[in-house]
Image (cartoon, rainbow, N blue to C red):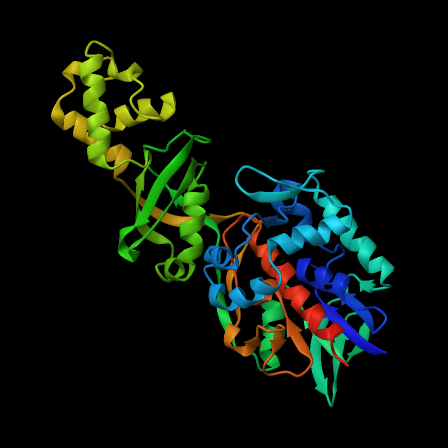
Length: 401
């Protein structure tokens, strides 16, 4: 019986094992940590954001700053609808939330972990934890995998280690080209009076742009302890990951907190001025922002909140509108979420055959998951890439004579 060694007990490794034909192969998973599926466990705040309700491969690839061209063919063979189907066949109920993220009904990542564990137990897959791979050697038709628990021989290797520098070094030593790792999803560190002490203030729809890079994104925005976060920031950080690393995370960002252009905002302001001239500016609800944020806008615009709205000068109004619609901030660094850390970089995609995720350089060697130079914005997309790639590998191996 031929031996398959899966290096890495994460999402891609387990999904691959769960779909392999155990009558044909002896399957072993090697995991260096004491726990498997660690990212699955903590994803989505412990609820596991399994995938995203986007069922058109052409639309789906738009969420991947790196890998979008290559993943198109992958997603035509296995996409989020197939993922849902796979889990539902195993009696796992999934639900689509308002933002299209998909979670187990149980709201617990343990449901997903148990499903994988059950699948591989039924297939007699052996899992070796605390098993650190030291070296992989090509020997004639086979591979010798040297680990902290001794040597393993493999007819086929499936490399799903995640993006740790050590695992990239190991695959580089086998001849693969590695694109340098840079963080991909991060929040922006900003010190500015407008944001001070407004931790937790959110905006339903904001527009952000980095003029120097001619790039813009929109979406919900959040003021954090260290600056700005939320989808509008995370998306721009993912798409511009490489450029932002080049400028060492020092750059200017422009924010429109209300997603209205300045002329439209001015018209709203003028209408309120006409309809409620005696109202105090501090208690006027002109724009859809929190009261705390509105008070801060007036403070940094040097406008007295006790002034009647009719007495607001044209210059004062312009300053308020500039701060709301065209506020420039200096970004002086980044903060990453340790739990949901995603990187750009990894194995060069030119060296992978995306029909079956096999290495173009190494025979009987497959690569999937975050070790590849593929990454996505948050929302279940990184997992979907893992499931789809792993499914292709299993299908290819199952079809071999």
